[in-house]
Image (tube, rainbow, N blue to C red):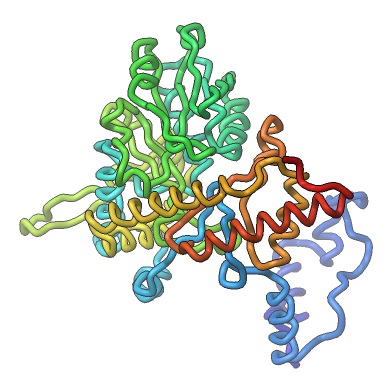
Length: 443
């Protein structure tokens, strides 16, 4: 069977001669020995195409997908239903293969998709300006922090502990790069953000919140945003897009920048990516936003057309004026998002959110019947998974004070029967774990 490597020995000799080195070893001579593997790769014997397929299929079978188990695992990525029409559109070659639309005159379809996407995000968030998407949710939070720094030049972020742990970590990492301090705000007994009067001061650049927060609690954004504004700070809110169909929009609540993870809008889990992040803001912040913005115009014949209105990457403008290094948008994933929103329509997304809310209320009632004093939650999860149910995310990984607490995610794919099954499996797993420890479950 021929090699998959296209370069022949003659090709390699010709390329080496062109760059003035005698061998591959000489080409890599500057790499220290301590960083070299020092042996051949353990690839095994060559296989035929059919044998490779069988090997990869066997490896893939070791994975467990949401089609194989009933999953209540969420914590930022969710098992939502993705209608088949999304793949039928985004796999069309004109959407699947185009590169960045540097030439608007031949990129009208891609630019129109960006424009329609931006319109949908603006309507969801209640903010007038949306970009054409960013990479994912946590980096959108980090980018929003930089926008705040550029806007007011202050040196501190106040970040609610209710913001997703990954977003907090991303913001903290990026903040170090531009000399910002990150101060964490605690949650009260109800799981909502506490904002002491003393926390907001003249150094505060932005207040960073999440709606609903990581624990699933709906925050009262309006007074928090008002307090930030009175102190001269911006309010940044990371949002789950589906609940926005029922809640007051961030814009209505006085939020300056609304960002979030778009995976729930027509994108599958796929090992956690790729997906897209959305980013919307007030008009005053337009020129500080990352990424790109597509705009609508009229051509010389008066026909509707689309252009790239704003690009803030250093490749497109002077480096000192650049506000991000985002090369492009997650255009294909964002396209899936706007197709999904169009498929649902204005009423459909409300009905979807209402359905999830009702099933969540049912799950809350059903799970309160399960004994609440648990043995180590990781062991309980293992026992549930063995019965084909992934019961949720162990909160102790990110919140030590909530050790042995479980975060349960409900989507429209979780039926009443699934929820009943979860309650039954949890109860039996808890009882089995106490029994294994030589004791009955505490009363």
